[in-house]
Image (cartoon, rainbow, N blue to C red; front, side, top):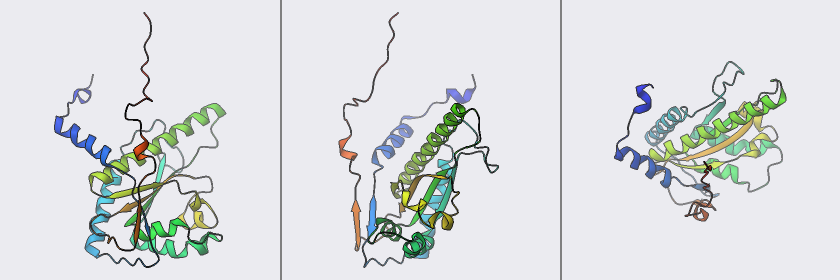
Length: 229
């Protein structure tokens, strides 16, 4: 057995990781019509570097099969909209979408965040037999979700807030073309990142995750499997 599999972690490392996972929470922050945040270049630069660092850590998520499409190994693809791009996207979204309902939450989310990260994956449609293709695509989706969870935890460790949205709206109208999304590409997460400490509280609405307090404290979903000898 390789020595790498025998490595031990000290108690402080374990406690820190556990603390970060438990502390991470949904921060759904929407900008009101009168919200006008102009962060300093220093705040933006610091936040952006932290996001990039979190993405660099998140890429160590496990994946079972290589993507084998567009000469890429990892099954996920990431598109990062920094603050200026978020503001442009928010203002142009109704026009580019074509039928966006008035008061839709996405422009409000874009205007409130420090940056936005879109995580997607591209299903393999050519592999045969079909059963194997379905298995591989399920693995790709699972790996992409693992990447997203890594990213959320890495953001929390860097004191950055986050909101994981499914984001079906960005696959509608003319938005996919604007974002460079393939016509068969699946969006797993739109992560709105909040640069805590640099964003003012005035003009914002913050909503917590609806199910956070509904988790089973007794872990009733855990089923031990035993076999009779």
